[in-house]
Image 1 (cartoon, rainbow, N blue to C red):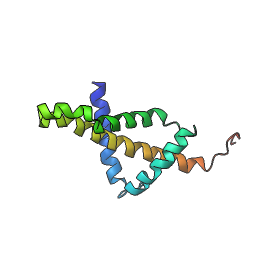
Image 2: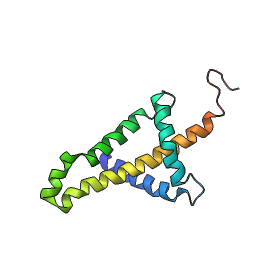
Image 3: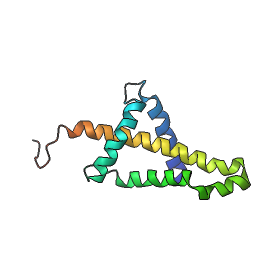
Length: 118
């Protein structure tokens, strides 16, 4: 049940992210441009996206892995369904996380590390 909800949330995030540029949110180009900065900020420990980046990396490895090609040869279309679901989840996760990163990045400029704002 929880797995279905997570997939549903990823699909909703994907739909929202793809239409966000039209609604005044970050465009697809801005989101993809933020991806290298997000990885660098996570590697430096400034951004808390480590687990999410690890999950996205694992999903990418799953999709491009040649080990997964064997079920497609035997199961034809049904073997491709898991890849389609994974690619859709991955796209939604990347778009949602880059939006979260862009919001963090925008608010970060107003925060001075080590100081408490009144």
